[in-house]
Image 1 (tube, rainbow, N blue to C red):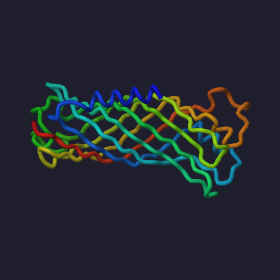
Image 2: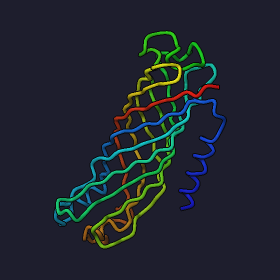
Image 3: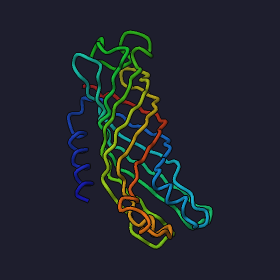
Image 4: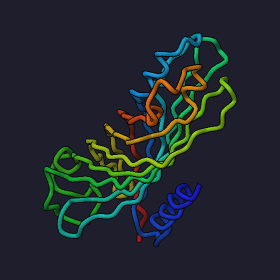
Length: 230
Protein backbone atom coordinates (compact mmCIF):
# COMPACT_ATOMS: atom_id res chain seq x y z
CA UNK A 1 0.00 0.00 0.00
CA UNK A 2 2.88 2.42 0.71
CA UNK A 3 4.25 1.81 -2.79
CA UNK A 4 0.80 2.48 -4.30
CA UNK A 5 0.54 5.75 -2.34
CA UNK A 6 3.94 6.80 -3.69
CA UNK A 7 2.72 6.26 -7.26
CA UNK A 8 -0.32 8.46 -6.59
CA UNK A 9 1.81 11.25 -5.04
CA UNK A 10 4.24 11.21 -7.98
CA UNK A 11 1.32 11.38 -10.41
CA UNK A 12 -0.22 14.38 -8.66
CA UNK A 13 3.14 16.16 -8.72
CA UNK A 14 3.41 15.68 -12.49
CA UNK A 15 -0.15 16.60 -13.43
CA UNK A 16 -1.03 19.44 -11.04
CA UNK A 17 0.65 22.49 -12.53
CA UNK A 18 -0.16 25.55 -14.56
CA UNK A 19 -2.93 25.12 -17.13
CA UNK A 20 -0.81 26.25 -20.09
CA UNK A 21 0.14 22.79 -21.38
CA UNK A 22 -0.87 19.87 -23.53
CA UNK A 23 -2.68 16.91 -22.02
CA UNK A 24 -3.64 13.61 -23.55
CA UNK A 25 -5.89 10.62 -23.02
CA UNK A 26 -5.34 7.23 -24.64
CA UNK A 27 -6.96 3.84 -24.85
CA UNK A 28 -5.61 0.54 -26.16
CA UNK A 29 -6.26 -3.14 -26.67
CA UNK A 30 -3.42 -5.24 -25.23
CA UNK A 31 -2.19 -8.80 -25.55
CA UNK A 32 -0.89 -10.38 -22.33
CA UNK A 33 1.73 -13.08 -21.80
CA UNK A 34 3.18 -14.28 -18.46
CA UNK A 35 5.06 -17.45 -19.34
CA UNK A 36 5.72 -18.71 -15.80
CA UNK A 37 2.09 -18.29 -14.75
CA UNK A 38 0.99 -19.97 -17.97
CA UNK A 39 3.17 -22.96 -17.04
CA UNK A 40 1.26 -23.31 -13.76
CA UNK A 41 -2.11 -23.04 -15.49
CA UNK A 42 -1.20 -25.55 -18.19
CA UNK A 43 -0.10 -28.01 -15.47
CA UNK A 44 -3.45 -27.75 -13.68
CA UNK A 45 -6.17 -30.36 -14.03
CA UNK A 46 -8.96 -27.92 -13.19
CA UNK A 47 -11.77 -27.91 -15.78
CA UNK A 48 -11.48 -25.23 -18.45
CA UNK A 49 -8.09 -23.96 -17.22
CA UNK A 50 -6.82 -21.22 -19.57
CA UNK A 51 -4.26 -18.41 -19.21
CA UNK A 52 -4.98 -14.69 -19.54
CA UNK A 53 -4.40 -13.55 -23.11
CA UNK A 54 -5.66 -9.98 -23.47
CA UNK A 55 -7.11 -6.89 -21.84
CA UNK A 56 -7.44 -3.13 -22.17
CA UNK A 57 -5.71 -0.03 -20.84
CA UNK A 58 -6.48 3.68 -20.49
CA UNK A 59 -4.05 6.48 -19.64
CA UNK A 60 -3.71 10.22 -19.15
CA UNK A 61 -0.52 12.16 -19.82
CA UNK A 62 1.06 15.61 -19.89
CA UNK A 63 3.43 17.02 -22.51
CA UNK A 64 6.90 18.58 -22.05
CA UNK A 65 9.75 18.98 -24.53
CA UNK A 66 13.39 19.97 -24.88
CA UNK A 67 13.86 23.56 -26.02
CA UNK A 68 16.18 22.97 -28.98
CA UNK A 69 15.36 19.43 -30.14
CA UNK A 70 12.27 17.36 -30.78
CA UNK A 71 12.67 15.04 -27.84
CA UNK A 72 9.34 15.22 -26.07
CA UNK A 73 8.17 13.84 -22.73
CA UNK A 74 4.75 12.44 -21.90
CA UNK A 75 4.64 11.22 -18.26
CA UNK A 76 1.57 8.97 -18.10
CA UNK A 77 -0.70 7.61 -15.40
CA UNK A 78 -2.10 4.34 -16.76
CA UNK A 79 -4.66 1.73 -15.68
CA UNK A 80 -4.69 -1.73 -17.30
CA UNK A 81 -6.95 -4.74 -16.67
CA UNK A 82 -6.64 -8.28 -18.03
CA UNK A 83 -8.92 -11.25 -17.36
CA UNK A 84 -10.12 -14.61 -18.61
CA UNK A 85 -13.28 -16.60 -17.83
CA UNK A 86 -12.87 -20.35 -17.83
CA UNK A 87 -15.30 -22.62 -19.65
CA UNK A 88 -16.69 -23.92 -16.35
CA UNK A 89 -18.41 -20.49 -15.99
CA UNK A 90 -17.36 -20.33 -12.34
CA UNK A 91 -13.71 -19.30 -12.51
CA UNK A 92 -12.07 -16.04 -13.53
CA UNK A 93 -8.44 -14.91 -13.45
CA UNK A 94 -7.87 -11.18 -13.05
CA UNK A 95 -4.73 -9.06 -13.26
CA UNK A 96 -4.66 -5.27 -13.09
CA UNK A 97 -2.01 -2.56 -12.91
CA UNK A 98 -1.83 1.10 -11.98
CA UNK A 99 1.31 2.47 -13.57
CA UNK A 100 3.44 5.55 -13.99
CA UNK A 101 5.26 5.60 -17.35
CA UNK A 102 8.03 8.04 -18.34
CA UNK A 103 7.25 8.12 -22.06
CA UNK A 104 9.96 9.81 -24.15
CA UNK A 105 9.36 10.44 -27.87
CA UNK A 106 12.22 10.85 -30.34
CA UNK A 107 11.06 12.46 -33.61
CA UNK A 108 13.79 10.93 -35.76
CA UNK A 109 12.85 12.74 -38.98
CA UNK A 110 12.52 16.14 -37.32
CA UNK A 111 15.00 16.23 -34.44
CA UNK A 112 15.98 19.87 -34.98
CA UNK A 113 12.33 20.93 -34.90
CA UNK A 114 11.22 24.19 -36.51
CA UNK A 115 9.24 25.62 -33.59
CA UNK A 116 7.89 25.00 -30.10
CA UNK A 117 4.39 24.45 -31.44
CA UNK A 118 1.85 21.66 -32.09
CA UNK A 119 2.37 19.12 -34.85
CA UNK A 120 -0.25 20.83 -37.02
CA UNK A 121 1.84 24.04 -37.22
CA UNK A 122 5.20 22.49 -38.10
CA UNK A 123 6.78 22.50 -41.57
CA UNK A 124 6.91 19.30 -43.64
CA UNK A 125 4.65 16.34 -44.39
CA UNK A 126 2.77 14.56 -41.63
CA UNK A 127 5.25 11.65 -41.46
CA UNK A 128 8.25 13.96 -41.07
CA UNK A 129 6.42 16.06 -38.49
CA UNK A 130 4.70 13.31 -36.59
CA UNK A 131 6.59 9.98 -36.65
CA UNK A 132 8.37 9.09 -33.41
CA UNK A 133 10.05 6.23 -31.58
CA UNK A 134 9.17 5.87 -27.91
CA UNK A 135 11.29 4.72 -24.96
CA UNK A 136 9.29 4.26 -21.77
CA UNK A 137 10.59 3.07 -18.38
CA UNK A 138 7.84 2.52 -15.85
CA UNK A 139 6.73 1.40 -12.41
CA UNK A 140 3.47 -0.44 -11.69
CA UNK A 141 1.39 -1.49 -8.71
CA UNK A 142 0.01 -4.86 -9.82
CA UNK A 143 -2.69 -7.06 -8.28
CA UNK A 144 -3.74 -10.57 -9.29
CA UNK A 145 -6.60 -12.75 -8.07
CA UNK A 146 -8.28 -16.05 -8.73
CA UNK A 147 -12.07 -15.96 -8.39
CA UNK A 148 -13.62 -19.35 -7.85
CA UNK A 149 -10.61 -21.00 -6.21
CA UNK A 150 -9.81 -21.37 -2.53
CA UNK A 151 -10.84 -17.87 -1.58
CA UNK A 152 -7.28 -16.55 -1.26
CA UNK A 153 -6.89 -12.76 -1.18
CA UNK A 154 -5.47 -10.78 -4.07
CA UNK A 155 -1.70 -10.84 -4.49
CA UNK A 156 0.06 -7.50 -5.04
CA UNK A 157 3.55 -6.34 -5.96
CA UNK A 158 5.38 -3.29 -7.29
CA UNK A 159 7.12 -4.11 -10.56
CA UNK A 160 9.45 -2.15 -12.87
CA UNK A 161 9.09 -2.24 -16.63
CA UNK A 162 10.49 -0.88 -19.86
CA UNK A 163 8.59 -0.20 -23.05
CA UNK A 164 9.30 0.53 -26.72
CA UNK A 165 6.87 1.93 -29.23
CA UNK A 166 6.20 3.83 -32.44
CA UNK A 167 3.48 6.25 -33.38
CA UNK A 168 2.48 9.10 -35.68
CA UNK A 169 1.08 12.40 -34.42
CA UNK A 170 -1.62 13.68 -36.77
CA UNK A 171 -2.31 17.35 -36.11
CA UNK A 172 -5.99 18.14 -36.66
CA UNK A 173 -5.59 21.75 -35.50
CA UNK A 174 -3.46 23.89 -33.17
CA UNK A 175 -5.54 22.51 -30.30
CA UNK A 176 -6.04 18.84 -31.23
CA UNK A 177 -3.71 15.94 -32.11
CA UNK A 178 -4.64 12.31 -32.82
CA UNK A 179 -1.95 9.64 -32.47
CA UNK A 180 -2.25 5.96 -33.50
CA UNK A 181 0.45 3.98 -31.69
CA UNK A 182 1.88 0.51 -31.18
CA UNK A 183 3.76 -0.42 -27.99
CA UNK A 184 5.62 -3.36 -26.48
CA UNK A 185 6.30 -3.52 -22.72
CA UNK A 186 8.19 -5.96 -20.51
CA UNK A 187 7.41 -6.09 -16.77
CA UNK A 188 9.85 -7.79 -14.40
CA UNK A 189 9.16 -10.03 -11.39
CA UNK A 190 5.39 -9.87 -10.90
CA UNK A 191 4.43 -12.09 -7.96
CA UNK A 192 1.16 -14.08 -7.75
CA UNK A 193 1.05 -15.64 -4.29
CA UNK A 194 -1.21 -18.69 -3.83
CA UNK A 195 -1.53 -19.29 -7.57
CA UNK A 196 -0.31 -22.87 -7.23
CA UNK A 197 -2.68 -23.48 -4.31
CA UNK A 198 -5.65 -22.11 -6.25
CA UNK A 199 -4.73 -24.38 -9.15
CA UNK A 200 -4.48 -27.40 -6.82
CA UNK A 201 -0.76 -27.80 -7.53
CA UNK A 202 1.95 -28.81 -5.07
CA UNK A 203 4.09 -25.68 -4.60
CA UNK A 204 6.79 -27.77 -2.88
CA UNK A 205 7.70 -29.19 -6.28
CA UNK A 206 8.66 -25.71 -7.50
CA UNK A 207 11.39 -23.31 -6.37
CA UNK A 208 10.58 -20.40 -4.04
CA UNK A 209 10.30 -17.85 -6.88
CA UNK A 210 8.18 -20.04 -9.12
CA UNK A 211 5.05 -17.91 -8.73
CA UNK A 212 6.90 -14.85 -10.04
CA UNK A 213 6.74 -14.11 -13.74
CA UNK A 214 7.78 -11.56 -16.29
CA UNK A 215 4.88 -10.06 -18.21
CA UNK A 216 4.95 -9.02 -21.86
CA UNK A 217 2.26 -6.91 -23.52
CA UNK A 218 1.69 -5.64 -27.03
CA UNK A 219 -0.73 -2.73 -27.27
CA UNK A 220 -2.56 -1.14 -30.17
CA UNK A 221 -4.09 2.17 -29.28
CA UNK A 222 -5.06 5.74 -29.99
CA UNK A 223 -4.16 8.96 -28.13
CA UNK A 224 -6.10 12.22 -28.20
CA UNK A 225 -3.96 15.26 -27.32
CA UNK A 226 -5.45 18.63 -26.37
CA UNK A 227 -3.37 21.81 -26.15
CA UNK A 228 -4.69 24.41 -23.71
CA UNK A 229 -4.21 28.02 -24.70
CA UNK A 230 -2.03 30.27 -22.55
